[in-house]
Image (cartoon, rainbow, N blue to C red; front, side):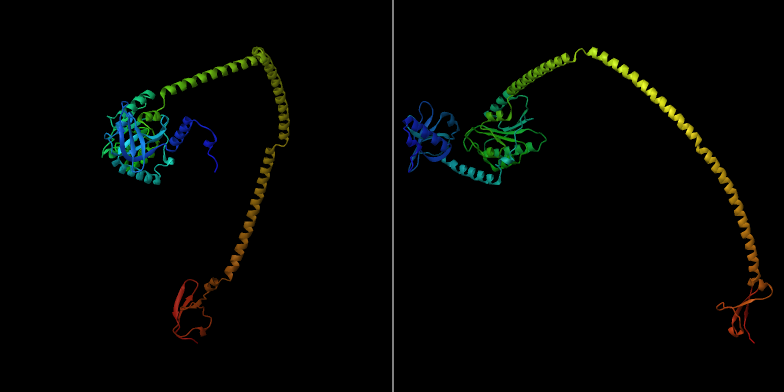
Length: 446
């Protein structure tokens, strides 16, 4: 079996005791133990010393004077209690003991079980998940404090707040923080604040006490109201050792109301000092920058020389350039004018207007010839038409009818009768003569 590292060196009793104390206080940072009180003592210091025992073992307990104000009833021998605190070692005697923070009568065990059950339930539902927690603003627009107006916790908070940043408005929502109806008051206050248009931070505030005293902040309705809040919620319930369900659900947990004021509000004096420091640093930096630029300007002035002499030189250069430009422009204009005159002369020799006049004259001549030819052609066509009309009139059936002939048709089908065989007795006939028609009926044929 390998040797423990403690066995490889020789230690004094004090060193060994300190090592044991370190291990115990690290491994058992917070314990909850139930047992019976025996050998209860209260010396002149006011602290309570007693032994907590059961059938098979016992352990010493110390309850300091400051924590005794949270006791519901005075302790006595034979009383069954639940102690919550941390393990420590009293080095002069080598005894390990419990430094108790809270001592409750054994009846509070049911509350502790209910606390643990609700904690596990809400944790499974994700109400404690850090992903849902909102960040506190650096400087809130307003603080809504939900607490009892008569509690010392309120005055502790206001005192620290007035010291850190007094310009932030604080609104008090008075509620009962202990008793059967306290949970309803707290949950309703959180819900009402979230129904308003205001923005800010909600602080749930209460001083320390026993598990029964703080139980309103362990109610499920309060936990769910805090979880549903769109405003950041800070839980400042009890003292540093006190934990409630609200602490786990809230967006931020402050160990005490005093600490809550420090967590919610920045230190105004520190901010002012920071601003002054930054202003000083900016001023110093700007002065250094200005000095650097001033040196660079002087160096540039030395290299550049007197700017007035340079200005005179550039003025002379500008005058000479203007004169050269004017002469060059005059030459260019004269050259362009001569070229324009040559082009005008060429254009005159090839003036399109003369061609247009000659073309128009030729068009007029052609128009007259075309008109004459058209008239002659029309006259020729007219004479041919008269000749053909006379010929047509000579062979026209109407011309024959004018000499006393007629055209006979059947009334029934309009067929022209050329032979007597085509009709029979009783047929209706229509006879076309030169002027008009005659209706008749066959009475006989030969």
